[in-house]
Image (tube, rainbow, N blue to C red):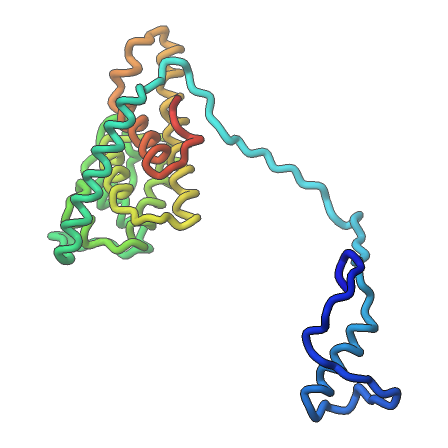
Length: 254
């Protein structure tokens, strides 16, 4: 019988179930098996409700900051953002064409995928000093030979390292901007859910760092320094690419 009370045509013929039918005896035919299923189903309630002791559960509250309030000075034009997305797309196509020609062996040995300290040393040239704002303590730039030799899991892992470093140190350098841009250019589409979440974290962190630059200028009563800060344009560019190229439009600058 259906939910609205109408009788439905049986899918399989069951036949009469005799009173002396013993469900404990193993079925010898397919018909006896179906009869056993029907007999067991007739003994079950239509609706079963579990008795849950709710006093054992504690009410949980999770506070999530979904947005970062930006000062009114930060407003890249739509034309600028469209131009950056077009250039980024061209870079991706160029890298894809070069990768299709064959894997290029890098001129240096790359750290293992799980060697976070090794990748930090490779990217920044110093495994102890924090990355300085607007400068770099050295390191190897994201050469094409390095990027084309990295498979997709390694690209995603190194990108995750950079986002974690950005969060932990709350500092941004031109060198890190180059690496982030290059790693984004090598990401394959469609994105995995965890990679998409990582890009959203990157955009939010860039927005937070960018806001801190403007806040410092407000505190110093100097509003003209903001656009000249060496980290301002790279941070804005990364937000633009995550929002417009990787389609996380709720994070876009308006």
